[in-house]
Image (cartoon, rainbow, N blue to C red; front, side):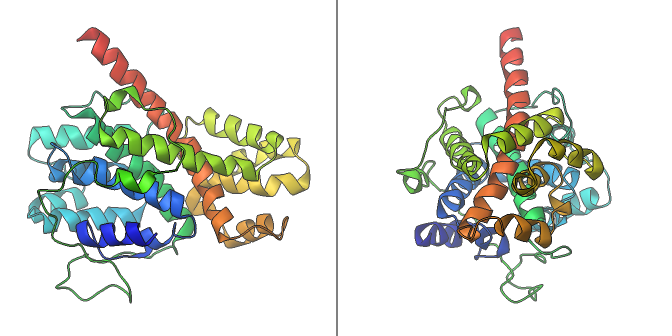
Length: 320
């Protein structure tokens, strides 16, 4: 965890709530940071472009915390005009940036997303998938209404310990975060990554977060899988519909399944009482376990988005 914090602090921002929230599970913290770095902060695609991708995803997930953060990033990257236009709901004047923003938004809708307008695929796909994962974790774990402020070191912080962006160096070497993943489950490398470090980071995050399934019974895992699959991992406001499948489970098994499903499909609806009810079923459950169960629900949802992106990419490659 200390190594992750050092790298985040040096290359991205001070350690704010969105980083701290997964620290009880350092494996998930490390994999999440590695995907952040290798997809969004380094590589050949402009950081501005990938910030737009994150900004396209976050509002569709109704994640106000991350939306405010990425608007702040655009301003610090020298594009307050672009940030203001997006904040007003206006499309970017630049057609290429508008297409990129539309593509990112389309990943939140079930079915084939819009064609990706440009290369490199690994950086854009990785940024979008990371955003879907982090949005869900933020909505599940951080207090409603919390915002990071402008993230500008020159401005008054929104709250004590609010994050600030560091100057983003342009000479960061790709792959420097992969050593943090040593010893963690690697998972299957996605074809869309074409060997890029972002692919290894995503595969590790998917594998590590997926280990949270071990906190549920096989029957509860089946319910989680089927419900999230029915929505293709996308957000839903129909909470009552999510409750219907729980009748298949014994009452004690329902609590964990509910937490995981809400983390994947409606994280802002998850309550402290629901998490406490699950933790009360086994005195061994800890903050570490809680992060893992939430991450399992989130990555189960994100895996469907990844599958849709991969299908579109494969079809595009065949038609090229």
